[in-house]
Image 1 (cartoon, rainbow, N blue to C red):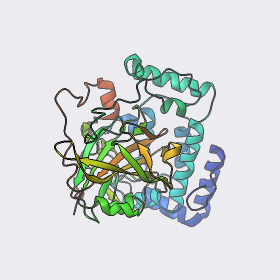
Image 2 (image 1 turned 90 degrees about the vertical axis):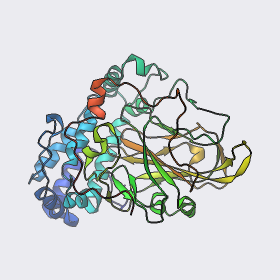
Image 3 (image 1 turned 30 degrees about the vertical axis):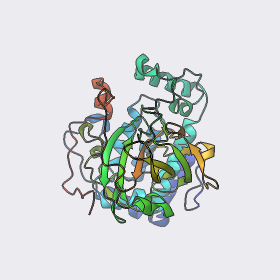
Image 4 (image 1 turned 180 degrees about the vertical axis):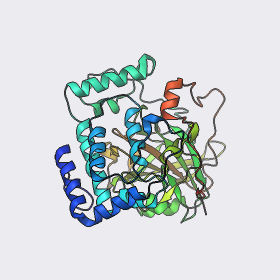
Amino acid sequence: MTRNGEPFSKDLGEFLKKITMWYETDHEGFRTMYDAAVANVVPYPDDTPEEVRCDWKNKDIRFLCDFFEEWYKWRSGVNDGLDYIEKFSWINYENNYGMVFVTSGPGYKMTADFTNLQGKQMDEKGPRAKKLIEKWVKELGEKRMAEYKKEDWETFNDFFVRQLKEPRRVDAEGDDSVVVAPADCVINMIVDDLAEDTPIPVKTVTMNVAQLLGNSSYAERFIGGTAVSCILMPDSYHWYHAPVTGEVVEACENLPGAYYGMRDFPGLLDKGNVGYGYDYSMFDEFRRGYLVIRTKYLDSTGKLDGEGYVGLVPVGLNSIASVNFRKKFRGPIEEPVPVKKGDQIGNFKYGGSLNILLFEKGRFPAVQLLQGQRIGILEDPQRTAGLFNHSYLTRSQRRRPLAP
């Protein structure tokens, strides 16, 4: 059931009948908002690749239904699901009317309903699931699949949250001053010196610290601090882990929010510099969870220098938008839960996702690496083309600053 009490559709047919009826009766303004969205579509750049083009200009309800039906039936490779997300994103690309349509009212309910159907689909067992898993395994290749435990995955989501053979890839495990990456991700420093009203870029939107942590009382701890974005690629390992050792003092697995709403989806990838300088748009809520860890600080001699807090915010968006904590970390937390650096916190099932790390003032000035540590990999050009680098990506002329 959606946030506003609308029951989810049982299957695709019921979903398509529902939104058709909503359009015909202008249910809660559905036709008014959809027509305004498609009437104000901004053309995609001329050199947009053919496989991600979709012209939404003045398209009718039949076109919308046909698009959802085609998207639902996809059973293809690693990048194809991302292609459909990109095709859908043109409806609200630099388009205020499109943003309103997909993030509020019946348009929000529509995206929530379709996302729920996709989630059910990814949890289905049977030959279709096996075929899709086999295709992804083949595309990932022997080298990458060698990192994972080989299992008889029954559903695509089982495969998507596959486990590593060596789950504790933890650097400086005995040094609590070292922060580790929470996931296999692309790191992007977002902003430091957070003010109470600083807009933190969250994949495609901005939020302040209080919003990001669901108005938690711990939010004030991070004023003046730093936020770091850790963006997961669709074909990456999709568990997230504790970045520091300490105690979990507060957690919430599921804060409600929007499923779609990318004003400039292609700009997110930014020719490989994922998320940097992105044209983020403001709205209040986003599907996410959060976890606050109380940790110990050490001085230069390794002695205790007080204690403080680190925030971990898993963010889900597009297609499934799931945020799943391990049972012991699900809130409300009545007694602090011990956690070691590198412990599994939870996972994202199929869909877009990232982690945001929050640090207190003066405690995390920059991403710092030692010689010999991994800073990236030399990519297969096909993966780069599919996930990172598109020549048509251009900076928006309306780009807003990352901080006031």
